[in-house]
Image (cartoon, rainbow, N blue to C red; front, side, top):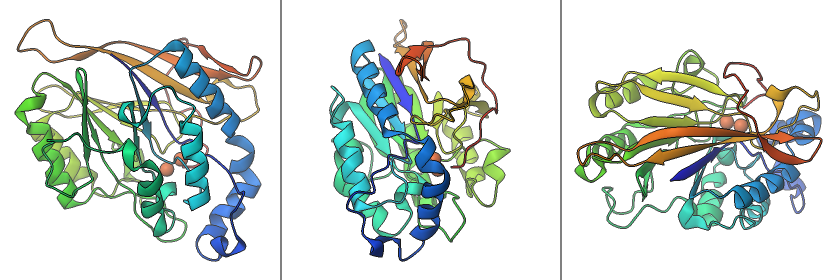
Length: 313
Ligand SMILES: [Fe+2]
Ligand SMILES: [Fe+2]
């Protein structure tokens, strides 16, 4: 099964945004948009990505948050429309929220209104009735556990919190026997790996509680966004370490020509184990990077992972 990971689309449409919408915390984000973000995050790049994904063919797409910039109803509507370009529908596309999607209180409501189908847990998932997070979706050999770390934070901050109750639900779900042969993929917007997760302003506040859960349950892969970087780390699991991977924004082009500062997405090929007791695992991966010359995405596996291109969160 081929699963694509992209993140931090920051899709921008100010059409329909009323002056009143900026009358609170949003003015900071609005200012940011006018100065920087709007210039470098281009929805046209996401359109090219959807074309590329449709063309190369994947079985599932995971988007780890920051779909919007200011969590405006209009932005979510615009983003949802662009997601409609994908051949795969909401059943085969999982979207979790980022801090920008809950920039203000109403963000969570708008996110659910426009993207509710994209984080709908499977019926019979091991979650209590009425709980949305983590969303639990089994697709072929992969079991996805999508967390929400996003909450309205004080001005100038962008940190995330999972919360004790959600962590407990995650623990229960990860230990569930029905996922014994699956590759258990935890999707989270904020990077759980230090040193970045330690940041008081933009880190993951309750990361040590997550570490405890992972040591008890294990997991096979954690995918995150938020840092706008290709990152690779690992966390202690149950026996095996848990690989943690971040990715550059899916709509970014610095205009500098630097390969590292361009939009990308990564495809993981996951195969079930041949042995009945074994677990599914990632057998190969492919990175596809925005090429401003051809205005399309091209395969580029020469890219070295590392902390190379920070452009906000
Ligand atoms: Fe973020
Ligand atoms: Fe972001």
